[in-house]
Every structure is written in C-alpha cells, then in structure tokens.
Length: 174
Image (cartoon, rainbow, N blue to C red; front, side, top):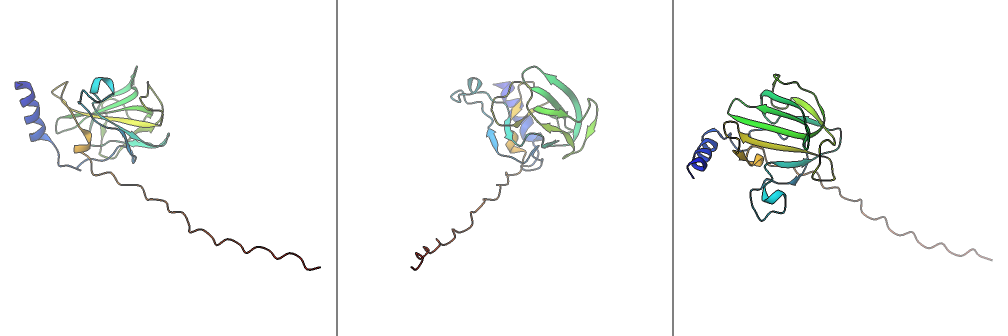
C-alpha cells in the first residue's frame, strides 16, 4: 500500500498537464490502457495504448528526452524508449523502422521511426504501442491518454446526394 501511495504521489507531482504531449501517430486508439482484471487482454493488463495508423506512417516522439533504447525486443519488435526530463520513460513498439540511436536527444514531435509490422502484434491492423511509466518505478505504468490532447476525429466523409433517376426512354415511333 505504501508503494502505491508513493507512485500515486509521484504521478501527481510530476504529471504534465493533460494534453501537453504529442500523439506518436494520428490515429484511433485500437486497444486502451487497462489494469482491470476483467479485461480480456493479458489477464487484464495492457500497460499502454495501441494507436492505429497506416503502415509506413511517421512515428514521432510524444515528448522531448533522451533515447535510452533503440533496438529490437522479441515480442515487441522494433522499439524506442525515451526518458523525459520530468521522470517518465516513454516506449514505442511494433515499429517498422527506427530513425534514432541510443543516446540521441529528441525533441517533442521528432521522427523516431515508422509504423510497420514487427514483433508479435496484438491486432491485425498496423499500429504503434505507446507505454509510459514513472522511470524510477518499474511497475509505475500510467495511462498515456492523460498526457495527450483529446484525439482529433477524422472528418466524416459525406456521400454526394443521389442523382435523380433518369426518365425512361420513349419507345421509338413506327
């Protein structure tokens, strides 16, 4: 219980304002954050969000920081982890390519890779996994959506109004 209070206190003290970070890709959340044991995924634990995007799309750093890992993880595939100045580790996985190296400083919105299949994907559609945790706590995962602005809904395509039916042709005169 004491550990939980410390983690919650750290999150409250160091949490950036809601909407302060950048989405890694502009797409829908396909699978949300969960520690609910009733959730069907991985015993109820999905420690991040899966954000859908077209394969080959650019993936950007949600926040500025230093790249602490850039490489391949067996089940997560090509991955990048960024440590932020305010004490968070931001991990992006299931990348198609990696555009940064360990030790690099990246700004918010800087290109870190592309969307593409790698690792063992949880979803058939292309996506990027975004996980955020308090760096000092290996179990200090937090919901990434509390750091991101509200998602922008894609414009709804409207079909043109139907054209009037053509008048039937008159039979030829004899």
